[in-house]
Length: 480
Ligand code: URP
Ligand code: ZN
Ligand code: ZN
Image (cartoon, rainbow, N blue to C red; front, side, top):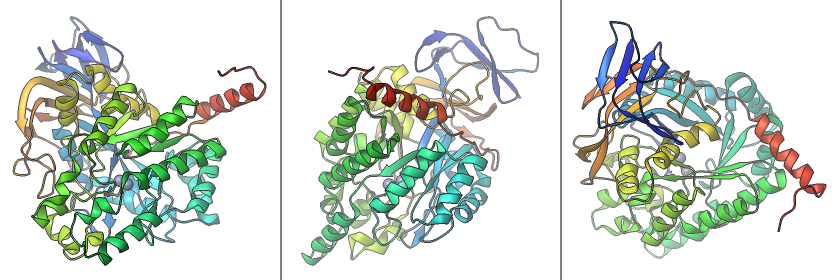
């Protein structure tokens, strides 16, 4: 299939330019004016619209087995929903169970993901430690294109990584040129606070944020950052939800440490009052970790994005329907943690970020696509409209509107945390791997069309850090 996108403004993270874009064979072949193209080429009129790199959601959990159930969204339905919202790649998580070999879990997830409609990649979680984990990390990096490993500092007695695991795994990441990432919450504190709330008779969803206050997140982020500093390894902190963990990131970055932060569309616009709703189903539908926070924390996240201290936006898309959430009817700590958003992230960020003047269009592109591609080492294959890049493109109609609702969304979940939100700025067309898959409300996602994307290790970046540190030690770099 060859496609000519005519008359739009190409918006990348660094430039905006009026130009046509020609795609063939799944790749962007030419960008310019008055391009001559073959006769059979499909032409899309993009005048008045923006032609942007397809979104990359670096944090999703399709069909995740978690907390005694399995997330309702599978790799087909989830990636198809993403395409409807302009997201053309996801990075999901392989999460081995306690003592499960990493390679066994990885192969399991690769099998599940074969039905994906868009491109996908995997972070792999390190949930326990022994010699085989050390070895499997090497196989994953060197043979399977995994360059990031996830550490859950929460979920005690399940998948939590303690300090011993963090240190061993971070050290291995240095050897391999891989990026450690953390879910930063102090799992012991959460565990104790949950017991305290339940003992006080607080059994409903309002107990969820009370057992996970911002300091619990701030402590874990600070600890992970300090471990990364000692191990001399970069660090990516997922779903930063509050000022406490953001401050730890800003402090480290100001000291020259290579720390990255991700925030979720949900954390930017949904606040903690949802947990006090009298209807259990409504409140439980919002239970995710870290929880939604108060407005001052939301404001801090926006400032984090605006200042560049937070680089990426994600969704942590992890769907549980009302019957699944009901598992925690009498005990909030048993409510499966997770909320959806892969379809809505870009429109919510555009509406609340660009329309409000907080972000420029170019910053929007950086935060929804380019920065994730760079941080996880798939740039410029992904994350840019450039000749030679994958033809993963969203054509963005800044005047288009939508009222978000579970009744009309494509996500396989009976609830939407953005329900009723009127947004301006939507995907009119999505092109995935050179195929037109979303045309003004018509979803043409193809099961199995998505490809597994390998992500190479980061040796050049690590070397740059080492060089800097050596120069610093030799007094060649002066700090005030
Ligand atoms: O509540 C959440 N976030 N569920 C998914 C697992 C995780 O912590 O990322
Ligand atoms: Zn998490
Ligand atoms: Zn997650």
